[in-house]
Length: 257
Image 1 (cartoon, rainbow, N blue to C red):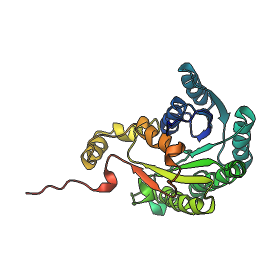
Image 2 (cartoon, rainbow, N blue to C red; image 1 turned 180 degrees about the horizontal axis):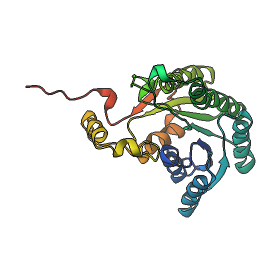
Image 3 (cartoon, rainbow, N blue to C red; image 1 turned 90 degrees about the horizontal axis):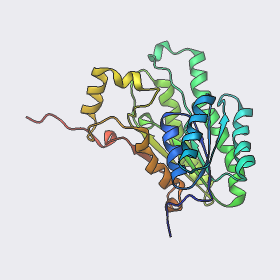
Image 4 (cartoon, helix red, strand yellow; image 1 turned 120 degrees about the vertical axis):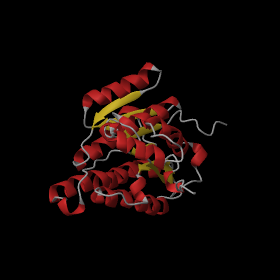
């Protein structure tokens, strides 16, 4: 028995056109899942779907606006219409605006919370309404280091990612035993959205020195954990918040004399 085989499963990955979402989508497909990649930018979605198909996988693209609940419902419908079912939901889509707490605008607050929390909430509701009657389902929420710690100048984002951690737990309780709900909290990952940040020499040096693992992560570093949480190998794992962070949350070395 292959505990990590995803053949016959269908996954919906939001924010799947680039970065962490693309890495997870390609990882799931490599283990046999048929994947719907969903995000705002069609060209990136098409690139991801083609990359999956070029190595023998099956993928479909869906243009998704997380701030439009009609579009959110449509993502679930697209997965079911295209592949006949939905077994795995990866809630990866998110946004952030870096600004000090006292400079946060209502517009930015609404944008961040609508995507990271409200959109995620209702997408999960729609998806699990399809999964639960079938008796199977996996929900994988993508949190953040800020699910567990505070980092300056991203207070609204931090609030939404804290909520992701708590929603993971309550959904694990409410949706059991049919559906397992877990969260992956990435550490510092180099993606198109963070490239500018980690290209800064002082930021990069700080990050590398802060991490016991000694390097900034890459999207593919998250794929293994996602495949485990999507697979039968994790059928008795639910409500867990797993940090894939190069050791950031474990602690740091200190300059003992």
